[in-house]
Amino acid sequence: MFPTARKLAQHHIQTAVIGAGVIGLSIARSLACQNNHEVLIIEQSTSIGSGISSRNSEVIHAGIYYDRNKMPLKAKLCVEGKNMLYTYCKERHVPYRQCGKLIVASDEQQRDTELPKLVEYAKLNGVDLQILSKEEVSSMEPNVASEGAVFSPSTGIVNSHVLMTSLLSDAEECGATLALRCRVEGGQVIQPANNGASAIVLNVDETEISCDNVIVCAGLASDKIASSILSSSLSHNNTGLRETQQPIIPRQYYAKGNYFKLENQRSPFTRLVYPLPDSKGGLGVHATIDMSGNTRFGPDVQWLDPDITKDTTDNPYEVDMNVDPNRAAAFYDAIRKYWPGLKDGNIVPDYAGVRPKLSHPQMRNVNSELGDFVIAGEKDHGVRGLLVLLGIESPGLTSSLAIADLIAKMMK
Image 1 (spheres, one colour):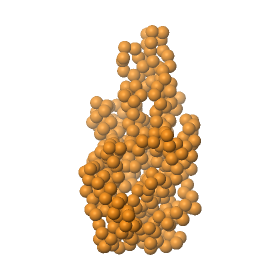
Image 2 (tube, rainbow, N blue to C red; image 1 turned 45 degrees about the horizontal axis):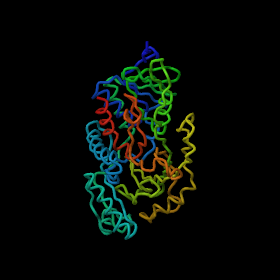
Image 3 (tube, rainbow, N blue to C red; image 1 turned 60 degrees about the horizontal axis):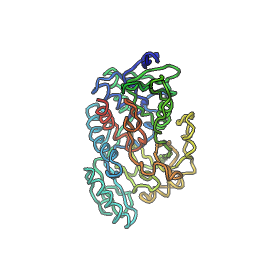
Image 4 (cartoon, one colour; image 1 turned 90 degrees about the vertical axis):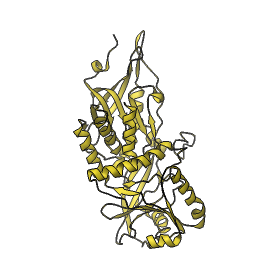
């Protein structure tokens, strides 16, 4: 007789969500509250939101940058998520501010060529931008130097920690359970005979948990966890159980982003100020203002050695998160292109985050076209009930509720 997952494992849960960042908490909330799933949220850290979700700009993005033909998920989910997030924050009293954003051109070529491209992308995505002259920019933000800009009125900022606490509270009210300090060390997929439903057994701190569904949204570790599960899959044939070769999950690469904060000068802006996107893979060293009124600059793009992500036994969150003070010189150069009034010595290292990317400049032939979010389901790896979220970088925070809504629909 073919052994069932419940007999193989010590415990059973309907749906396991691996990762308690803003994406995992949003998904857990939707599955528990909309789909009435029994949900277990598994988090290796001592608190929620301690990975990627705690190390970003906390910006609610409008949905400007994403070519819907090349990045359909980012284009769609960012706009939908933005609207959902503003509504949620109002209803749940999560601190936010719809302050708007300027994207500035530092020369005439950027003004005449690059800004119109952004306006076109935004229009196709249903986002309204206002084109501003040099004089209009100066009237709106007197400290900004530019040759013109576009203004995004729907961009804002949010207190991500209060947001995540609220999402967890919603999920728990609907019956979800949070398990902290629990690390998923691997797992196994059991493919039964007669095309029955797959069973997924997770190894969590040497405890086996069988699951009908598993959502892997563990940020930097998503590819490693998914690969460890799929690499030990079993299937059933006439002679019993045998190992099955599963499709390879796309590998993630790491791009570190460093932030510096402003000291000894008053905040020069009332809105967010961005340069045009960085050709290295980011949105440029921009100025953001948090809910306390503090100004920080960043992130830059510091590609980490692709070999860092090779060893599946490594904990990706052990990457050095310190900000190298020597990077300040490049920050001064970047910031002074739009704020020449920045004085020497007035930015200091703040914090750093790491973005999961599906391509790397040193690995040009690998996943070179994958700039979009990836949600790998049964059609990708052949396992029913397993969803793997990869490359969830910016605008992940903005898109979180829309991603969760999409997952909930996929799981019905």
